[in-house]
Length: 124
Picture 1: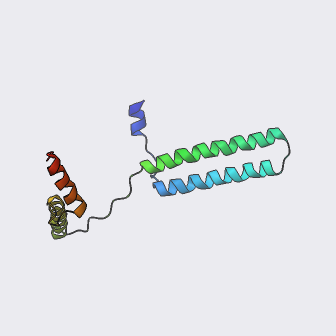
Picture 2: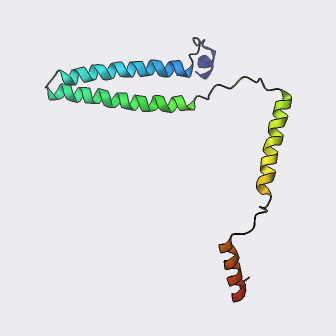
């Protein structure tokens, strides 16, 4: 079965954005029809049917959102020159080095007072 499925020719793949737009249009059409049913009828059975259709549309919409988030974003074209890539790496390394260096700023007055108090108590 797996062999058969892998050998079938699928139609041209639609992009995820197009598929989501088509699904949204279908869901909206079904919701509009359910709304019209509920709006134009006072029969509890018809209103319950409309609610069930709306509930199913909500569940389908949630599934569509989950599927849409699984599709990776299109990659940007590789137009960067090697020199740009090297400069980017060097820039990131510079930031990382500066972040790991201790600050040359003096300690805050509150910290100085706390350290002095701890020294008096013999804890540091």
